[in-house]
Amino acid sequence: MASIKDTSEEMRANTWFGSLPAAEQDALLSSSELITLQPGNYVFRQGDVPNGFYGVNQGRVKAFTVREDGKEAILAVLQAGNWFGQTSLFQRTPRMRDVAAIEETTIFVVKPPAFEELMKSTGFVRAIADLQSIHMNWLYRMVEDATLHSTRAKIARRLMFLAYGDVAMAPQMSQEISVSQDTLAMMLGITRQTLGLELKAMAAKGAISLRYGRIEILSKEILQKFTEYL
Image 1: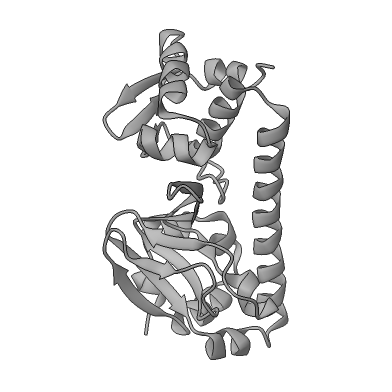
Image 2: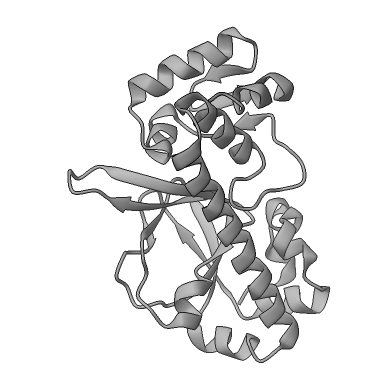
């Protein structure tokens, strides 16, 4: 079983987890098992019976679906600190998408009986409602980007979201985003070539710097201006 000392710095700094009272944090982690996944290992697959509530302690996982042409459509990259999987558990419905490790990742797993026990606490029920709200707000942002913004604005907005932890929306922005251009293109539903051209234009303006497997934000202000492109 996990204990509170097992948590990573990212987990302790996570907005949702960090807002829980110490007793709720301890109860959650004491109800968890800590497992290690290798790159490509699945947390769960689309259609699976829900078998846990999960927290990424170290590493990253991706939530995705496989299109008819066999290519991945990445919906989100969940970094350390993020908790997920609660919706299928309390709705008792099959998983709607695949989730797999991008790199070596350790995850807290709360099995359904332990989750049901935690849900007897009013404080934990309120915390799960808050987590659901965080995820719904993220979903609305993604729908807005897909329907209302230009390609350049969509890319800039997603970079800003990723810098703040994407789904988690941390209070502090990271200057580096650990994401490959292939992954970012799949997240945005655009071609790698289109993404490359737009990123080079942003780099030429001094907003970002392109590195191998990551993107460095040089100017939040310039990048913010790109989010306003129609």
